[in-house]
Amino acid sequence: MSAAPKSRQPWPMKWVVLAILVVIVPFTYLTLHYRKASPAFRPYEDMQQRANVVRLLSAGYQRIPLPAERPADPLAGAPTSATSAPAPGGLPAELKSTLVQAPLLPTDITRVSAPPQVSALLPYSFRFACTLPDHKRQLAGADLYLKGEEIVIAPDYEKLSGQLMARSTDNVIQLTVPAGALKPGSYRVTIAGQQSSRTWTLQVK
Image (cartoon, rainbow, N blue to C red; front, top):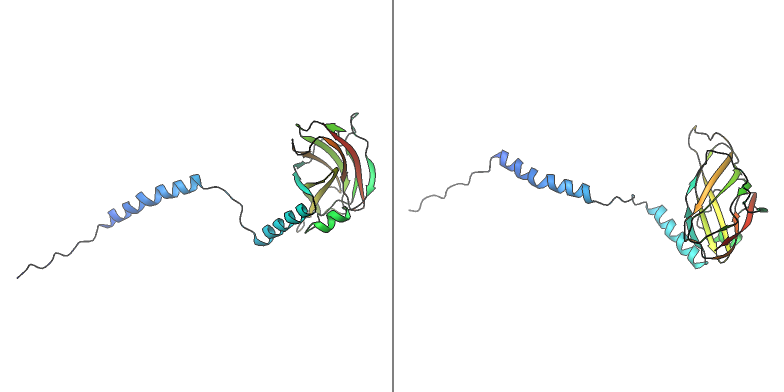
């Protein structure tokens, strides 16, 4: 008569816990250390952005996001500043009809301080003063739209929520076009406001 098979004893809990820690701890470290940070997927915003890009390219526009900041000192007209002239308010009709969602422009562009020329190898920084319709707006960013020799710059303001309010309806903003974004040539630059804009000529060498 054969002997009864020996029953297998379970591992002691301490060895089970140790085995889990040996696997989980290194895996967690490697995941957190080497994982690439990426923005959360926002279906509506992402689809809208893609549609915007496709429509702009189809219409012949190139969109360039511009770094924007608020300088501490007030706007001063430099001796080398280009002469700007008044221009009609709003975006050009073709550009406005192309955008999926139009930016929230300031009411008026009142002054511009911008160099009349720049090297294509250098960034192009300029300042402008604008007014807002109320104290419930703050700067969200700015985009440059390029088509041929026409440049349209659209500052975008967003509405403040709750009881938040801006200090003033008068704003001075500095924008910077990245180096290499513009090819050598002569351009007509327009900063768009809802009711009035400003335009000037820029030579890129």
